[in-house]
Length: 400
Image (cartoon, rainbow, N blue to C red; front, side, top):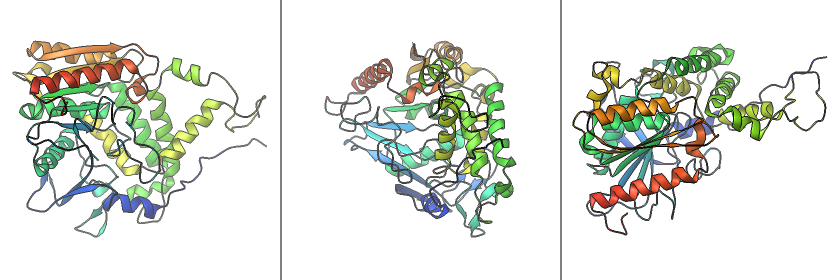
């Protein structure tokens, strides 16, 4: 008989996840009905909340604040244990004492995006109008909507201007939106491994993931919470497909090659014979323990809609006309999801806008995920850029 190994059900219960959706292990900013969030789809989201984490202390003149914008499958837990997985923060390699984003110098903020599932209002949250989970009744959100919500959070925190906004991938898109929408509030920007619009290929990969989720019979047209199911198989497949795009062929070959998983000969089945198969199945099963399937649909769609030039008559330079923000644009040679050509197009537009911009293409075989990994050249560039921005803004040695 031909064997088949299925993707296991998540170990974390739906109750654990539902708690983090509306009552997260984070600080929470609540916005009542008199403070609606206007969305690009034409509706106001109200009431809503934003979950966020902070590291370090805000100085007296509020000049040392740095906003980290997280990527698609990440959240606000940058440098602390994740409440669902118990794992270390996703950017502890960058955030911490003595590291480029040093909380002894800077006040660091990261919020869960609107549409997410770790405490900010999204499709897994309770709709106050019905008392039920929003599901697909939740309005479609965009990158500009996410940034608009972040601006409201900063207003609540009393921060007018950010020393820097930094992020990679979807986080980098948010960085660019910040500079286009609120240039006067951003002293410096560090967009990493991103683009000013989503490519047709990337939209296609996202559609593949969304269809995997929606094809899972346990998805139940987005009403799985109400019906006591979870589309973990579809979401796991979506994660597996997406994760492949974050890597490079060289990185996969170096890490796995064609090595077998705990065996010397093939099983002549559909079990995970190869190490790379086992790795992808692990990535899929661990992802469903901490992420909501509908949030995956909404956030991938937000990335698909992102197009700064399209919002400015098709001319990218117009988005940055007269901008005073200092930029450091970073790409990686093996990133085929957001290739260097996309970063160069951004740099050319910034140059055409007479913006102050530096650019670094870092040679590495680690693919798109390089910004999350141990790449010393990236750390050195980020540290130097932040120190230069701090000096230009007049921070003391202690403050940065």
